[in-house]
Image (cartoon, rainbow, N blue to C red; front, side, top):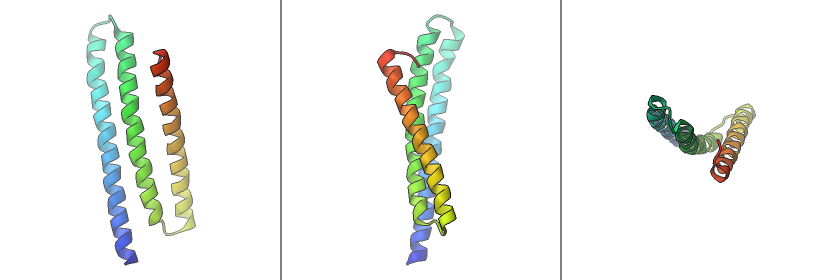
Length: 114
């Protein structure tokens, strides 16, 4: 039963990581497409960049949330304290990245600045 749980958790974590990659890839593609009109015409470029940055930031936050979820699932199958420590360090780093990115986005929304 324990081996079955490990297999399920590993596959679930991989699926969640795949979703994170897809979310970030989609957000990146959307950002590039959103920047093209701003690059082709100079007027309104700053406002367009700000809007693209805020939207892209939201996709990054969502991608980081999925990555954190996969870290939590992987912690279930971590075979040693070393593995758990590595996962914990990664989770803390991702949590801080997510927190500060979210704060930047809230500040940009409130002040209109990136």
